[in-house]
Each structure stands twice: as C-alpha cells, then as structure tokens.
Length: 301
Ligand SMILES: [Zn+2]
Image (cartoon, rainbow, N blue to C red; front, side, top):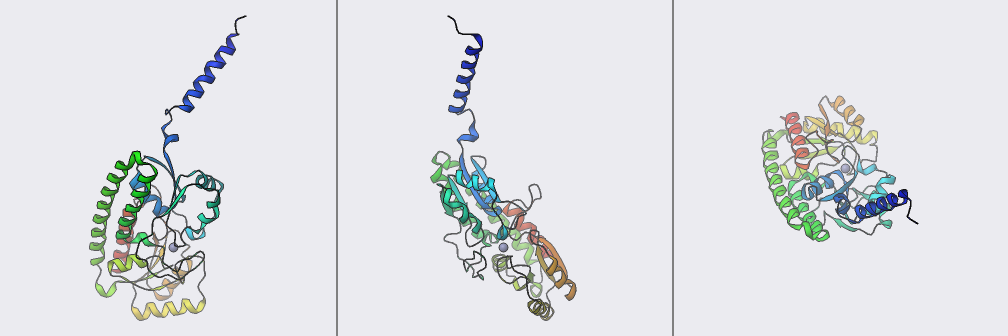
C-alpha cells in the first residue's frame, strides 16, 4: 500500500530541516561566541574581531557599569560564551555572579598593565579600573585580545592579527591627535575637577592634573558629604580650576551645583565609564578619546 502524499511531503520537509541544521548554511551559528563585560572592552574586541565572531556586550554604551544589574539575557549570553573578555579591577564585578554557569574561558584584558591606585569601592580592587583612557593601555589590551581570540578560534588567527595591528596603528594616531589638542591648553590651565575619579590615566598620559573629584574614589555609588563638597569648592577657587567635568552616564546634579557655586564651566557629557551610542562618533575607543579631548581643550583654553 503506497504512503499517503502528505506523509511523503512531511518526511521530505523533516529531512530538509535536518540538513539545514547540520550543515554550515547558517554561518552565525558557527562563529565563536564572545562576551565582553563593558562597552570599552566590547569596542576593543569589536575592532579586533570584526564580524568573525558573535560578540555580546553586557553593560553597553551609555550604561554605568559600577551600578549594573545583570538581566536574564546577559546571564544566558555568559552561560553560552566560549570566551569572556573582562576588564576586571572592579569595573565589571557583576560578571562574578553569573560565572558559575559558564564553561567559557575568562580572560582579564588588563592583566599586565601598570595600574594606578584607586580607592576600593564596591567590588573594588584597590586599583583604578578606567585603564582605557590611555591609548597605550588600549594598544596592550588589543594584544591580549588578539591572543585570546586566536587561541579560541585558530582558523581566524590571521584575521585577528591583521585587525589588531591596524587598530593599534589607529590608536597611536589617536594618541598623537589627543596630545596635540591638550597641548593647545595653556599649561597653567591644565587642571580638572571630575565627577568620579575616571580620568586618572588620561590625565597622567597628557599632563593634566585632577585636583579633585565630586564623588570620592573610582566608583559612582556614593554621595559626597556637605563637608567634602565645601572642601572641593575651596580647592577649585584656590587652584583657579576653569571647569568641572561630569559624565554622560552619571547624574551630574552635584557636579552642576559645584560649578554654579564656583562660577566655572560645567561639561556634563564626557565619556568616563562608557562610550557614546552607535553613530555618535564616540562609539569607538578612538572616537571617545578624541571627543573627550576636544571638550576638555575647549573648556580649559
Ligand atoms: Zn568609573
């Protein structure tokens, strides 16, 4: 007795479905799954990986990573990742809660950098985590990312290496451009007051001095006391600081009050912990560095 036609069609459809699942006809399924914890790490990973990997960034552009709470989708991405790239140093402490379900390799891309001291806050390490504000640190982290990706996905090693070299050259160029912008500021004016202590590496690299911060320390979670705000106001007057710099990802209300009280400029949209939204021009490390440098140079000239 011949089989009914609909059964034949069902069998063919099932066979076709099976073939498409098994085959390499869906390339995104075959790519290495990589998680980057925070936007700056994601931007460096993106520059090295191009579209050769599937990259998920957890605390995306515009988000304050110090206060980030993991979402269900984040936990899933972390559990499925074959490689997890993190900043460490307390900037992505949220990852620790989700690592129990992960079998992926975790690489801390700041390992080996020369670190600045930083007050230890929530999840803090005693070191300043904002390393990406010095392009030389970025160049070193690109090296770590190239090695991590090439080890996890040797078939694309040549691509990662070529992308890494090209991006390191781009970062060296950015370093020269930022230097030229900061050199346009009269030396006596190269003093900053920032919201939280996110710009220590930038200041050290380019000869600026951070004379005070609104929030004590390298995390964003604490409110300054009235006494520490009053002391900061004194410092700004005594040092002749020309501007207070707050960040796009942190509420600038106290920084704004300090600027009003001292009658200095407020710049409230530096990128400290995060990057700009896609298409903003500050959605890459070099774009972020140049955007910050232009705003700092404008305000302190
Ligand atoms: Zn920060």
